[in-house]
Image (cartoon, rainbow, N blue to C red; front, top):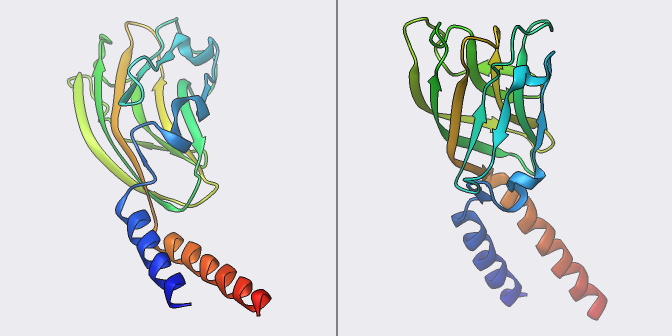
Length: 190
């Protein structure tokens, strides 16, 4: 039994020292995400550019004309959380719109709720930031670039340094499960 605990402790230390996902790889590979384009025209004519994945992704905002959907047209890129933990990423936003960032909003989605990150102003065209938020296993989360006017040129946002770090308690639960299996196997062997 002593060997089981030594191996378990080693496995937990290794697991706890590495994030579940760094950049868009593993369970969070871009092929596992869903792109949705709400509004009319779809997404305001926006799209996703995944050519720099796994290190970064770029959301290309809409510029196909006035959005005829309420409240807006958007490019959404979402995924279901594999485990409970913390999401972090950096973002670089640029608006080519005549109205600056006033009508093109970037933010993150969590279970359908939009949290804006870009500052919406006629005077601001370039912005960047670092964001961190918690998720629970099964949450649907991701990114959204909204175009409220979808004309007079688009905005783009590049997301990089994307990481999902599992909650330490998740490792403890895995460890307890392994111990339970080991104890059960030992009882069967006797």
